[in-house]
Amino acid sequence: MVKTSLALSSQHFGELAKVRGIVVHKLSPFEQRAFAHAVSHGIPNIFRRIRSNIFRVAPPLIIGYLIYDQVERTHTAYGRKNPAEFANDE
Image 1 (cartoon, rainbow, N blue to C red):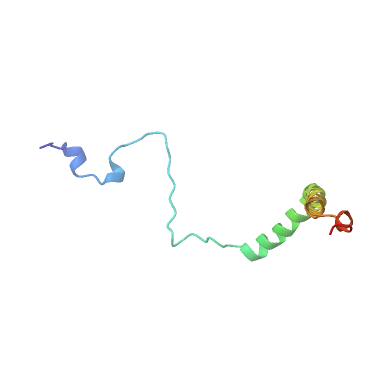
Image 2: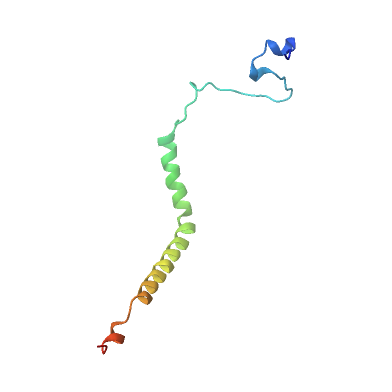
C-alpha cells in the first residue's frame, strides 16, 4: 500500500502543486455573457468583412466556376455520339 504524504492527503486534485510566477484568472460560468453584443456588433461586422473581401474572393470563384462549367459541357458533348455518322447505316 502506498502512503501519501501529509501535504498531499489534504489537497484536492487541482491544488496538488504550487506554481510560482503564473497568475490564473477565473470567471464563473454564470457571470460570462457568451452572446454579449452578438446582434448589435456581430451582424454589422459580418457585412463589413464581406464587403472588404468580396473583390478578393469572388473573381477566382467566378473564374473557377466558368472553367468547371465549360469542361463539363465539353465532356458531355464528347460523350455523345454524332447522329450524322450513323445516318447511312442499315
